[in-house]
Amino acid sequence: MTISLRKSDHVLHKELITIAPLNRKKKTLLILASTLLAVGLILYKLADRYLIEHVEATVPATQSAGTAADADDKEKSASESAPVSQDDWNYNSGDIIIAVEKAETGSGSDKITYFVADVQLKDSSSLKAAFAKNSFGRNIIENTSVIAAANNAIFAINGDYYGFRSNGVIIRDGILYRDEPARDALAIFQDGTMQAYNEEEVSSAELLAQQVSHTYSFGPVLVDDGAVSDDLDQVSIDTNFGNRSIQSSNPRTGIGMIAPNHFVFVVVDGRMENYSKGMTLTEFAQLFAELGATEAYNLDGGGSSTMYFMGRVVNNPLGKQKERGVSDILYLAEPT
Image (cartoon, rainbow, N blue to C red):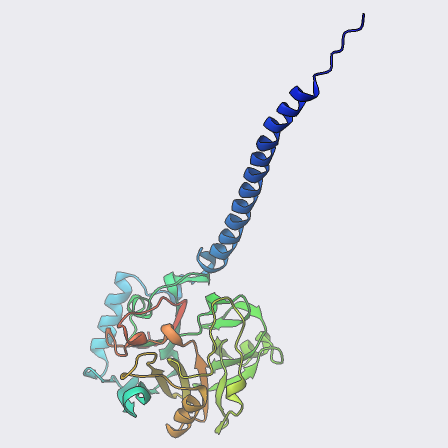
């Protein structure tokens, strides 16, 4: 007599029906877990690239705002120097002369509002640079006014937002922080002059040998040797995530040189109908030429565009009276 241990086809079929949904459920859970893991990894990489602070260097103590004792020394020094003449739009200490003017052109949807600061310096050491939170690195930001106040700035504009990209040549106060040549940049020298240069053609060592104070890596060059740059409607600065085209009318920040130690800073408001639409790059370049600049360079714009003077923001960022955090500023302060 033979006894069969095999289950009947009927029982086996029932068990297979039971197992099949379990396998499908398990497969679905695995797919879901894999998807969540992939999404989490992508979000982390984005946060790491654009949100999480990465400090690469801190500014030497000699370049910081200083201690209370330093502030006392500055106050004593100021009291011994020529008296300062100042109001909401002007400043004159003998070492620094600043005249800020608000200008408006057009009307309605074509209206443009911008601010011009004509600056004359006795010595180029009054033109300084500062990083957000006194640190160099990625995603380290503060409002222009906060950085300015922390450094006893009389006047300030936003810089090139170097922290939003990983390339470019970044020299501030004669110190090389990054050396990744990528574009046409701006060099400001200790003799009070400024000049556009190609980062891939002129080395940082050459610039330092020529006593460069600061470099800014954004662009484009607006005016070079008295000539307004052409083809500005074809300019591409970089391709970082979140960038928008800069060719159309936008808020702008720029610096121009009229003569050694005689600079003009311009901040254009924009993106707010009936207040200011902003300027195209061509309009911006032409404005600098009209102001007498023989050299001019475009800095970070959009929501970053901010002009600070005597403790207040004089322009209206994006028409919302709200600053956007930036990684750095260019500012004026009395020489120490």
